[in-house]
Image (cartoon, rainbow, N blue to C red; front, top):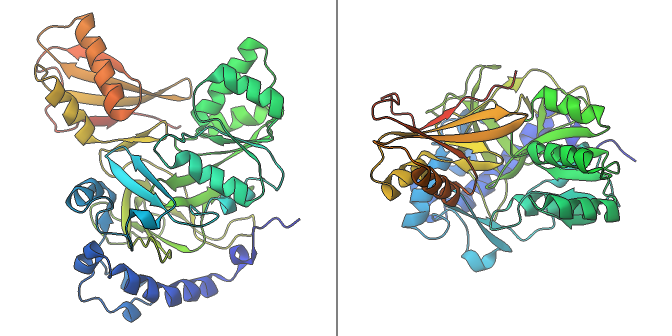
Length: 410
């Protein structure tokens, strides 16, 4: 069986560039039929966008602007061809941001990344990403089933029930966040449950430091990571070379200086901007707010596409916690629900290889009732649990920052 998903992965880079940009003109012609792209790309001649330099001259569309656009033109912000009824599934993610799933066997382009992680036809897959409203679970599910893998749609949580499923179905592979895989493994050790069937994993949605990857390896699990979003699906994926993430086929990744659309010099850290070649759901220069850097040369695994270092932080204050984006607008909403509070700051840290959120709030008085109410509001708005610390008025810095990502991945 081939090490590669198909021959696209090993073609000459120049051939790939010619193919991508020969198809981009038609995608642009379709994109400008939508109300928002018609304004954003007004006056652009699609046939003139024939290389990366020309593409870099187009304006970026910021993911952070999608909630506002979608309020103006419900539900997809005037960025899709056809109404909601033209799609297969309809999702929402924190923001809120509404996302459609196109009608295809592998609509999020996940199969290629799963194949690179060693998933093969017949492998039973335990999928622990959420199937509730958000596309995360379906991204992995559709990719695995496109490979011929039976999927256990477990979702996150319900650890004891997951132990029963694992011992009954003996899945070979895991998909989900690295944090939840650690929770399962640690819980199984404590409870004397058998998870030994799981030999490989593709994780996403949270940071995957080398220390945690090595811990999984010591437990007999070869775990690789993918960089994916709810809007775009799989953008890049790790391979057996363990040397950066290879950009997926049929998309264009640029790395730009944050706050601009200008490409950074090779190797510099910048914001990820993605253009897709999907005729039904085109994205033209979507700026994701995530930071990365390009790696030089080709992957030792033999794949020839561009490589990136992976997720290196956020270019804006919105941040990803346990696979879910938390945005400044959500923290502001906490203040509106609790007007007795002063400044607010959400601090995100890592403890025991897991993301931890702590909401710091200024208030005249601190009591258990207020802390409990704030914890409930935080979970209601972000769908994530977090701690609450009450501080006296004036204790938090007056610097405009409402989300502080203090995680270290050294």
